[in-house]
Length: 384
Image (cartoon, rainbow, N blue to C red; front, side, top):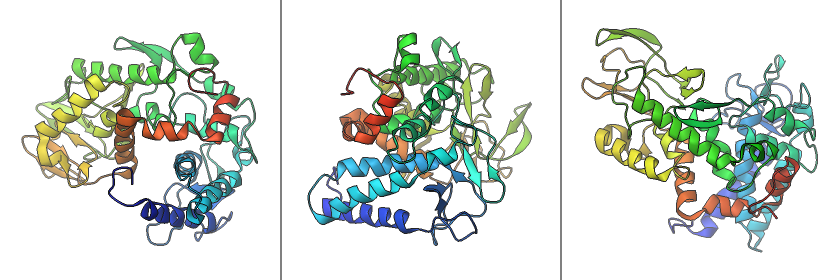
């Protein structure tokens, strides 16, 4: 709508239809024919039925990313017509229903997920990753807020370290440094931890991106194609789950995997992911934009096609016929054939944040986001 591709009325109608689905879809503790429980939603929903896909978990983080989008819509649609009023009201209804207290399986931290078959996953949101947005939303809830000490529990798991010349809170895949930042402008606002380090979370993410670029330039694994303009490790598709000898070297490859590089945690099979770089555009535009352009130029329509960048590529994997997904070019390597929404989204939104502050600007006006940041102890900058 902002770019004039559709009208505001068309955008509002689609948003309202989406919110009506999430509000009215069945929420129940049992059975395959449900969409969620206690206000949370399952990690994947069947494209045709909107119900739980196979036996995936009730996902607290994927619910949180959805809620961030819903609250964005709430603040964006600020007109007085009935459709936009309904959008704002449904956004509150969906957000207020989420029972964060219930999800604190081991208080005060929020559990990563729950299965109706066997209960809560034995892992909590503690330590830096993509879950920052989750904790802010959980603290902000007017109805079922997380314990007030949840943020301290989250921060208690941080690992500060120096990696390829950059000192920051470590997390190996770049998506952990990007997803919360799609929605929240962390420039010049700080919690107690970052105040103690003398930086903000935006600068932390900038350093994470620069360290990954430094890693690619050094290329300790000797992977093909890596360099100053070809880099980026994060969760993405991959060529195969197998060990192959390529160029006289035995290599272990993976399909979908959370790739990354951080202090004491290097998960690298030569597979690069454009969203790692695209999602970091606002943090370090001087290196991320040239890298996106270089990857598009170097690999042309094998990597960049109808919907932008394909999800991933691996210049080392030249073993035609050995891939389990995608295609292999004997010279250029393996290329995915899929576009993943969760990887396209950060590219699109973060480029828009870099160009116009669009998502950040809208979200700065959302009272729930402001409340959550304040309850987590953030001060300064744009916070009222």
